[in-house]
Image (cartoon, rainbow, N blue to C red):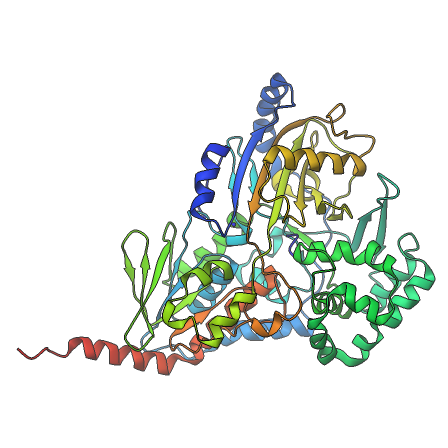
Length: 570
């Protein structure tokens, strides 16, 4: 769950944002507004205060919790073993030059681990912003705004290993081990699932569920548990077999009460994949529940202490460059040019440059890659199956208020709203946004199908109506209470792939049937589905495939050079 498109890029108004969006219809675009509702001198007065407080922001220590002991878990050890594969692999006599398109987490991961194995990645990013689906920008006031509300779970072993390998583990701000849900029928109130530290998994999760009597009754809990029994007994084969069912259909099949859907699954579905239970594959929910219940700290959450491009992506870039790799921004791929035998000849960029290598990786979102697939490959089953994989739209909203909101927590909150997924008061949860006097709410607006084409004003007005229910004593839709100082709306028309039934067989392996061509991205085959963890793992698996293919790729490259050196008879 990524609740959830460096050099920083300043997009400070719709006039700048819209042309940028037109260049990237499959990714994301953003717009910034100082509130038309706010009193003008309040905005100006606040600007001065904001610049003053930013100098001291990182001196404040938020009330965070200790990093959980993850190193002994099986998944963490397995992820660490995969990382060591690259460090311990035999050094190549002639490093491969690997051209990678897309500097999101999948592309960065691919490049990082190839560099660890002694090869030379050339990472190309179309925009002047790192991060892909975790990109962020700075506005004219120096405030960051992001593509999504990104949460780092204890059940993300490859990401946790990555933070350790880069020496930046202290940049994660861990929160108490709880899940907190708003109560729609009791505006302003919340219901908690608290996981006791003294119990092992899955007992800590079972205890958290049993102790909560506000969302589900005991009979509903019993029926829910009975419905889940086949998954507990059948294990992974059962989980995989549920890919053909939506959550709603699975619930009817298992006799699970409808209120479980209303109270639990709607919130989970929107947080996991930005869609509702009548669309989401049950396999997705079962995989998440398995991770959260089987690992003691699996559902424990952490916030990054700043923007992902600056605090996570740049350390990866520095690591890549320190090992001889390259990272180039503003390098948009226009076409994948082929050799007569159907293999890749080079990547042609929009500026006319041609980038050649010994191997090629496309680490863009699936929707962008489908636009790049050469006609000669289009009927190959491996590529043809990708048509079923489609990115889901999502909107991320940031609102700066003129006061500190009290009805909140230092944590991620499940809104259980019809329009919103999850939200957080970032002025409390994240050091970068810390402000003792004013709140900044970051919210995921989902499902967004019907809203992605609407104006920012409409989106903010709808958001305020929902916030009035979450903060009844502090926020009113007409701003007669808390007033908006400014807001940002970031729209991603095609985000993570939509995890609908029967799409699992369409997810490709990282090694394609085209020799020397590979894919990376959370949509490729890996066990963490559409998430930051899935993106990082896909990059590692892609790099592993390339390293394993070294001899064949090196020989192919050598033959190619020899053929170019053969003199043409006069």
